[in-house]
Figure 1: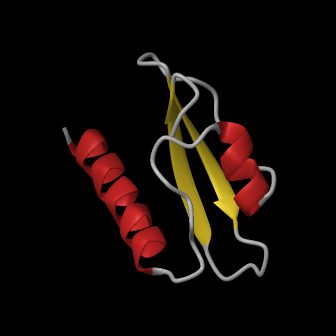
Figure 2: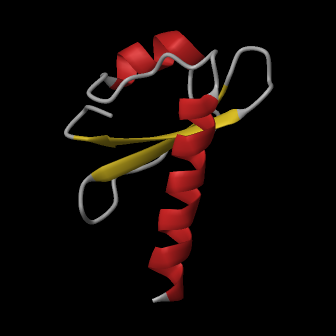
Figure 3: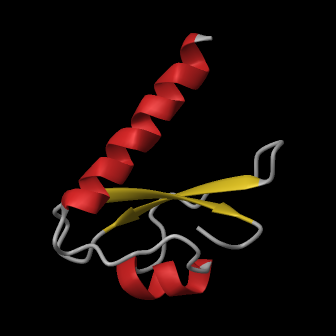
Length: 76
């Protein structure tokens, strides 16, 4: 139970950081190529989990923050 809660908290924290940044323009529904164009290639590309969700870690071009983006069926 603790693992899923911590994962949810990490995802929500990453979403909050991205949403509050005036430099982040990623949107829900973007493809992996669109996110790559925004942030560059992921610094930690993930593999699909048992639910088919891939979690990639990106660093913005200035190195100010990390963005964790999850993809389902090729869309964020």
